[in-house]
Image 1 (tube, rainbow, N blue to C red):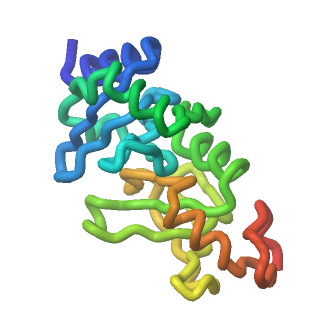
Image 2 (cartoon, rainbow, N blue to C red; image 1 turned 60 degrees about the vertical axis):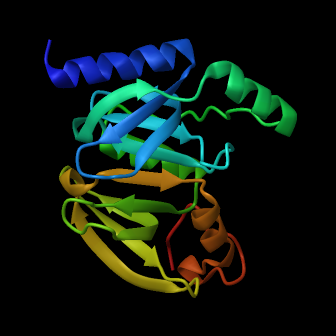
Image 3 (cartoon, rainbow, N blue to C red; image 1 turned 180 degrees about the horizontal axis):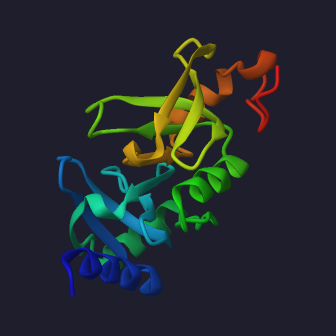
Length: 193
């Protein structure tokens, strides 16, 4: 069994059991610990447990970038903290069967997303709404810190290494986003205008 197959199997086992998992990627120092909510042939959707021992949105990671899969926090420890804080994981239904389906299903529930292309632009992420897809690329209307449209970016789908949505940062930016002339309102799913 190949290393990638072993990693995918370990992620699927964590998903089936509902236990937390620790994912370490090959090129990033940051490790991801949390609950697996979807696994596709090339992508895993994780609800990360932060270092504050709570949740902050969702992270979608390319499986080919994952170097190791390990155990995360002890289940009894997390269960006690979550019970005391009256929080629990919030499974999200997204389609991880391909990057296009993943982005489409995320954007049905989240007005804007953060996309990272860490092997092309390390340390840089863009926030916005994907407006167009082809088989090999996507176009994204990006939002700057002012909440205004910053740029329109085109990139290869193969370069995407991480997609985040529902995080405090992305949702905060969405509150002030002015996409398509919708000043002062949450960005909607359309980008006409």
